[in-house]
Amino acid sequence: MATQAYSYDVVKGFTFSALLWGTVTVILGILISSQLVFPQLNFAPFLTFGRLRPLHINAGAVGFGIGAIFGLFYYITQRLTGTPLLFPKLARAHLWLFNLAVVLAALSLLAGMNTTKEYAELEWPLDLVVVILWVMFAINVLGTIYMRKQLHLYVSLWYIIATIVAVAVLYIINNLAIPVGWNKSYSIFAGVNDANVEWWYGHNAVGFIFTTPILAMF
Image 1 (cartoon, rainbow, N blue to C red):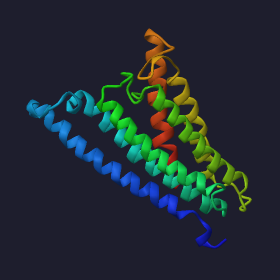
Image 2 (cartoon, helix red, strand yellow; image 1 turned 180 degrees about the vertical axis):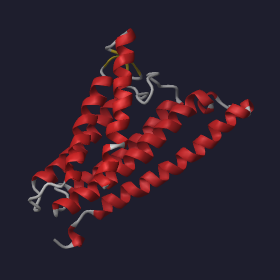
Image 3 (cartoon, rainbow, N blue to C red; image 1 turned 135 degrees about the horizontal axis):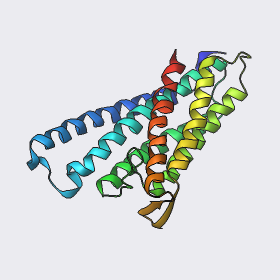
């Protein structure tokens, strides 16, 4: 298979996007750190520490971290299967929707739309967008693996499959909520149960978003 057949444009797109959001994360980190020392840097309500900190976390974890992982998985999957992406146009749509989702998430957090759950601050409309993004990603990667020209299934591909399945389960269960408006919802879990589910998600999300993808690299 000639290397020209692989969809490297999507890989590059996610890589550049990750670098962009990584830069934004660093800038936000410097700003919110400075706000702790110089409270007068808390300007308008939408630029206060309380709103910028979750934005900083999400820009780093989602924009930089998951953006880089999307690019990494698209690259590894094609190379280890000897097969171009099954749906290259879907991958391009995934790239554009991903960046749009990050922008919308940033605007919502600055506007004060926040579930108050660590690492799961986005309200239900954006949760639906995240699920759509993950389904687009899963269809392309799992479909490409299924149609692979390389008979041997490398261990890195098993890590990729595990990441896709585990993150889907973690995210959906933790973010089950009852909407009470377009910008507000309440978790279906309450009290200690909500805290248990939240940190079952928080701990394992770190494992399956930032550990298994790294193992897939090696």
